[in-house]
Image (cartoon, rainbow, N blue to C red; front, side):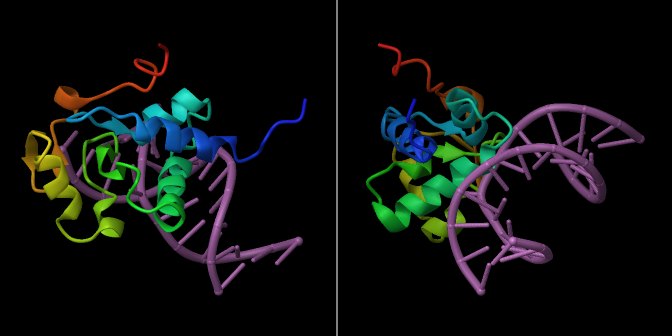
Length: 113
DNA sequence: CAAGTGACTAGTG
DNA sequence: CCACTAGCCACTT
């Protein structure tokens, strides 16, 4: 069966684009949903490429690491990611950390409808 | 083509 | 929770 190899990237865009308002998810959750589990780094790379490829159409600011830290804000710009999340009623535990367990969203929830 | 780099995670101490 | 190590895969040089 002919299968695409960049299937992973397209999937990442699909998932991230469907994260609901005020919700966030982690790289590991996306990676695991796509079936790669240990390669959570690729999720970050996919988003990084999407910025150069598609621009801010993807709510990349709703994707954080497993601790809820805004690791990706480095590529966004200082304070941009933080501000966007604060506008979505996301609770911050620190200047760079959100309450992950309060806003965590699993990819398999709404994509399964 | 080989080596280096990276928006990560899990395990160990 | 912090520090360090190993594994992971794609992209860049």
